[in-house]
Image 1 (spheres, helix red, strand yellow):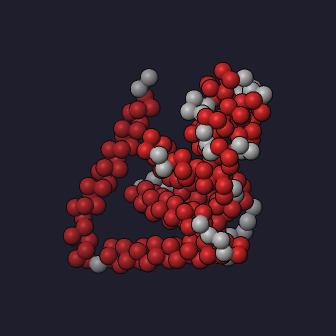
Image 2 (cartoon, helix red, strand yellow):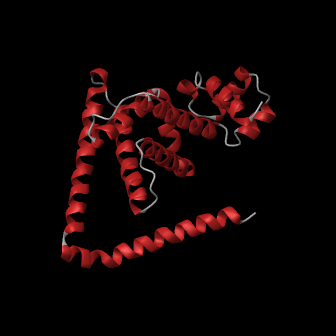
Image 3 (tube, helix red, strand yellow):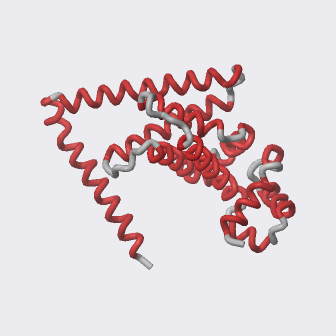
Length: 224
């Protein structure tokens, strides 16, 4: 059995326990018992126990979103509406109680970086699914902005008791509308000849930082 198959089995088994025990060591041990996977293998597959299973659950939601998005015809939608649709599909792919438990887990300082990385991964999955793959400064800003929108919407969703979560989707639309206004402002600034001169220096610095990050990333791949 390969690692991914073993992890999927552990995750399937853990999901029944997480609403009661969280993404915890207790839930992880129960998953080992229920899945029939021996403890040694489980520890190799998920060295961080419940945290690894929570991240696996999050990535499963990303995959479900991409599959749902790929099955829909979005050609008649405005781009902002495509983004909203993708975010909604991603949220609807999740179980609210499992996400609630995950939010608690990733709010702990030792797990915060993993939680931020998971949300960034979702933003990247959405943009990539919508055809945005060009690696430039906008690649980072788009994903950072969408990470903020997605994270805020999930938190709103967790407390939303409106029929069919309608208040959540209205909240999402407002957040995307706000982002679009900012993008319009940025576009106007870029067209302003005075602003071009003023911002030329900062833009060059950001470009250099992006290039340096890419070089360090490539160097890291070469180091054994």
